[in-house]
Image (cartoon, rainbow, N blue to C red):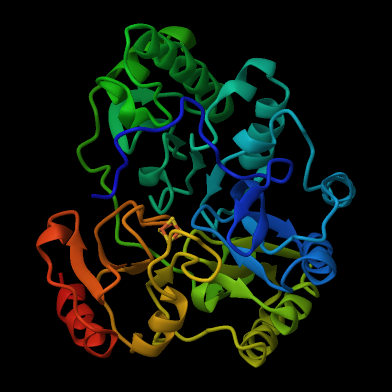
Length: 403
Ligand code: SF4
């Protein structure tokens, strides 16, 4: 139900230069490798949203920024302004700068180095826009959703699986070699008459072939996989979090992933920010004496700084009116039906495409046109779930979140 049988050979992921024609107007997605953006850069994006868009900046499940309803934006001027803010370093590679980073990564240098090396490699501009790299801090919070991920131990995972590739101190060369391996294997599969893969899991025997091809390119031998490398429970950074060197980070959730003018102006005053894959923001690297003031500032901007927030673990796709495919205004309904709770993440979607769904186990709340089908994924068959009206969704979600 969720995967169309036919699709174009090339993915159509939106970007800063390739705008998507959404129901509410052109939509631009700005890649933010590792989710790391300066306050000044966020300010530049806010100005674009206010000048040409709907005044909001959205956060995506890959920690990118999105602008909607850009009907009045001259595309060339939009690109110029993003480039001037340092958010469009490579027109040829803008769609492939898909790099997830652990939000609490103590040293973002590998993300920066990977981005630079990726953009300097002409062949890698051919990667699909869905192919995702990850630089993980060892917590596993981003590694298991990516196509290729580097861990601090030197382990390199393929589609979340450890096949025994170890490249200590060589994260960037290993990830680039993996990307080249993907392009070669995808070409092989497509030449054999298969559908051109966009993700490692779509390759025939993908993780194993990727590991073998990458190991050969690096000149290393595959070791025994580590069975303890498993996907952890999601870890949304909320409130005050100690960091290395006595510094502090302050994390907040952004309800429904939409930042309005007041929140944006508050966040812009930070020197550095991290967008999280859970549609949150982190202000990192603070002296301890500034942390509480940031908690108050973020709360004052209607961001959620308490672990007991009703929005903890809850996300939604765009839905109506922004998406023409949507069968409901899922953000409105999610706001009405979301109660404080814990357990599995919850993702609301306006149709069976399921955009932005978490990679791991979660509760899916899918609009059907006659209420919502609420199911656990993976596991339940949503076709078998009888839709329930919005008024009853909260109780069904609460029961399913318990796992
Ligand atoms: S899941 Fe459906 S309704 Fe939601 S954004 Fe994707 S296509 Fe649109």
